[in-house]
Each structure stands twice: as structure tokens, then as C-alpha cells.
Image (tube, rainbow, N blue to C red):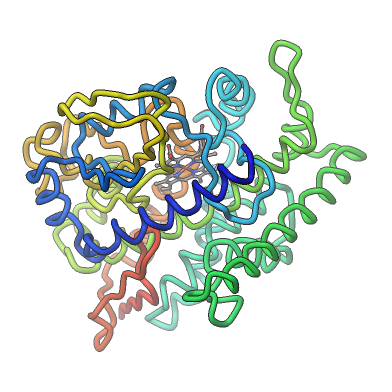
Amino acid sequence: MSSEDQVHATRIEQRLRSAADAMIDLAAPQENYKKLIEDGGFFDTGQGFAMSYDRANTEFVLRNQPLFSSRVTMNLGNVRPMIPLNVDPPNHSKYRKLLDPLFAPRVMDAQEEDITQRANGFIDAFIDRGECNFTEEFAELFPASIFLGLCGLPEAEMRSFLDMRDYILHPAKKVPGAGEDLSKRQVSLDKGAELIYGYFTDLIAKREAEPADDLISRFLAAEVGGDRLSHEDILDIMFLFVIAGLDTVSDSLTCFFAFLAQHPDHRRQIVEDPAVIPAAVEELLRWESPVPGGVPRVATEDVLLPGGQLVKEGTAVRVSYGAADIDEATFGDPFEVRFDRETNPHIAFGAGVHRCLGSHLARRELRIVLREWHRRIPEYRLKPGHEQLEYPQGLRHVKDLMLSWS
Ligand code: HEM
């Protein structure tokens, strides 16, 4: 992608974000989504960007890859496209063929014990206190710890992972003023990118010299039809993993536990019958849709959507997974949060060729946390005095979710 394209894409992304954010109450977005679907489900600004809310249009955009390209950049400090998110087929399929087997459900079976131990380790640290800042003491640390395990790295490396994540995804935490000032934000993004490229360049060299039973060694050894991943490929994959695999799980956990702390009947179903947990995870993913929207897709020609709207060539369309997940056309009773749905075709992990590579890992993490937490802390609530929850901009998450139990 040329730098001109990148600037264009960044501008589009920023405008899409501000337009979308202005309309949605992140604490309880479902009513907003419903209204947007009732109002036509598609919003074209006429200035090169549009948003899709209804399920049929959204699926069409996501599943018709030749018509909608994801070769855009979000300007996160990366110097090349992130793999595989910003790669279109046929190259995209080459990468997924290499990557999918490394994240298959049976591979995740082997992680069960490690993930369980790590979840319990964090709970051990605060269980006797009778309260915790769930966001800071559990949700933000747990997925990073799982990644350390996958990369064969010790817990002492946690700070490096959190720094890489925060410089890119939470610039205001790292660089004063980066929340409002674009040039300060860029300083933070560049620093994050420098850390990611430096850290993983070193790790790749180490694993190449001495292979281990870990993710980078598997990337180095992976081969499909004579194709192997270059070092740059691995860096571009790891860049995406740092931003796609950490906050998404943290954010889901804060949304899930905020819901369960406020809905004792749902919480009791999990405590009394842990077999309901896989269904509960799917339903909470649907209802909360922690990743509310996707990477914009740019129309490669004029396209007529199933809803009848014409998308002009070059228009960037951002889909809302959250809205698609409460669309009555797919779910007869979308506003009921039910752990006994027979089928749950939510698209919280996306749809089409770019559907989440880490969904089996994410599900495993979420199921294990729900199981271990409710086994050890069955009764909990929002800590008195902290009932007002804050859902900041960005992916849906609760800042400083304070839980207490006796
Ligand atoms: C609950 C947690 C998660 C949610 C809700 C989630 C959601 C998503 C969504 C919606 C997409 C599609 C983006 C698009 O098409 O624009 C996606 C893609 C992706 N996710 Fe996840 N994700 C989660 C966890 C993870 C984890 C743990 C990993 C770590 C490996 C991961 C890696 C990826 C990758 C690599 C892609 C790009 C796939 C491609 O382009 O082919 N995700 N995710």
C-alpha cells in the first residue's frame, strides 16, 4: 500500500470512529443498534465512508471478499500491513493455511492445564482480600500471561508485553496528552512499534538458533505447499497478535463479569451447572460483542448491497458486529440473554475469510476463567460505592471494574 493510501485509510478510520462513537452508548449499545437497524441499517456519509448495522448487509460485506478489500491500514505504527488481517485472498489463504493448524481446537486442548493454572494464580493473589479491581488485577494481565506461555517466555517478561500493548492501544496511558493530541499519539504508536519489532526480531533469532516447543519455533517450521513464513511475515503476524489477542480477551472478561455481577440469576446458572459455560460464553459474546466493529472494507467496484443500498467504488465500509448480533432477522428474541439457545450464530468473531484466527484460544480462555472463578468465588457483586460503571471509547470494556465477595 502506498503512503498516500495509508494516510487516506487513517483519515477514514478516524472519521468512522468519531461518527460511530458519537451515536453509540458503549455502556448499553444494544438499544442504539436496534434503532440504527430500524432506520435502514446502513449509513453512508457520502464522503467515502459508510457504516453497516444490519446483519444481511454486514455479512455480505464480510463474505464477498473480491468486492470488499481489507488492505487498509489503521496506522498503528506498523510499517507493513498486518498479517493476515490486511491481506486479501489469494495471499490471505496461504497465510491462514499455515496459521489455522497452530490455533486449532485440539492444539488448544494442550493449553488447558496451563491456562487453568494461570487463571488460578491470579485469583490466589486476591481471593482472601474479598475484593479486587477485576480489570487491573485479572482481566488485563491474564491474556498477556497466556501469550507468554504460548511464546515459551517467563512471567518476568509480562511488563514488556504490556508495554507493547499499551503504547499501541492505550497511548494515553504511556504518553501524556496522547488521548487528544494526534502527534503525541503518533509518538506512542511509533514507540510501541519499535518495541514490537525489536522484541520479536530478537526472539525469532533466539528460536532460530535454538528451536523450542513454542509459537515462534512453530512459525519458523511451518510449511504449506513449499511456502514458509519469512522473518518479516512473522513480525507482521506478531504485531497483529499483540493488538488482536490481548485486549480482546481482557475486554470480553470485563464485559462478562460486569454483566454477571449485575445479573445474579445468570450467575447462579453457571455456579449450579458449570456445563452451561460454553453456551454462556457464546451468549455473552453475542450480547456484549466486545469487539463492536471491524476493520473497514473498501469497495473495489460499485456494489449493490442486499438491503438495496449502492456502495460506490472506493467507499470504506465499517461493519458493526454488535448490531448484527442483536438483529431480529437472525435472533427471534435478541434482547433476551439466554444460556439455553439451541443455536447461536453470532458474529462476535467476525465472518468470512478474516474470521478470528484466535477464536478457539479465546473461547478456551473465557470458558476456563468462568469455570475457575465461579468454582472459587461463586457469590460476588459490584463493590458497594462502585456501581457506576465506566465504558471508555475503543473496544467495549469496563474501566476499574471493582468486585467484592465475602
Ligand atoms: C474474545 C476475544 C476475541 C474477539 C471478540 C475477537 C474478534 C475478532 C474479530 C471480530 C475479527 C475479525 C476482524 C475483521 O474481519 O475485521 C478477528 C480477527 C482476528 N483475530 Fe480475533 N478476537 C478475539 C481474540 C483473539 C485472540 C486471542 C487472538 C490470538 C491469536 C486473535 C487473533 C486474530 C487474528 C490473527 C485475526 C485476523 C484473522 C484474519 O485476518 O484472517 N483474536 N478477531
